Image: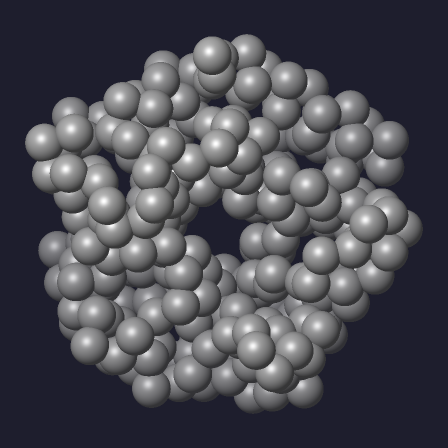
Length: 240
C-alpha cells in the first residue's frame, strides 16, 4: 500500500537535507505534486499531507479533477505541452503554466486570461539538452522570448523550466540544471524588467537532489509522492 503522507514526509526530509548541504533555505523550494494519472482521492491525501501545488499534463484529465476539488485551495500548474486550441481553458483555469515555448502561445494566454483573475504565472520551457524529440525552445532563444513575454498584460513571467534527458549519476544530472540556472542569471541581467525573475522549475523524483543543489525553486514530483500511476492519463472517470 502506498502511504502518501509518509512519502511526503520523506520527500521534504530529502529536500531539506539537500538544501542544507548547499546552504539554501528549504522554504524557498516548492514541491509541485505531479498528479498525472492519479485519482482525486490520492490528490486529496496529498493535500491533507500539506501539499498545495499540483501539476497536470493533460487538460481533459485536469478539468475532471478540478471540478471535483473545488473545495480545496489548490494552486494548479500546467506542466505539459501547450496546444494553441487549448489556451483559452488553460488561461481560465490554471494558476501557473510551466511550458510556454513560443510567443504566439504566450500572446494567446495573455489575451484569454480573464480580467477578474490575478496574472497567470508563466515559465518558459527550455530544451536544455537541445533534443529534437522534446518540447521547449533552444537556450539561445530564451532571452529574446523572455523580453517579449514580460511585456504582455495579464501574465507574470517568473522564470525557466526544463526536463533534461535522464542521467544516472547526480554529477551528470547537475550539468543541465547548472546550465539552466546560468541561463536564468544571464537573462536577469539583460533588462531591469527581467531582474525579478525568481523561478527555476526543474527536477523530478529521480533527479531532484541534483536540481536542488543547482538552485531549483520548484521540483515537480510524482512517483516519490504517489507511487505508480493508478491509471493511464485520459482514462479517469468523471465520477472517480
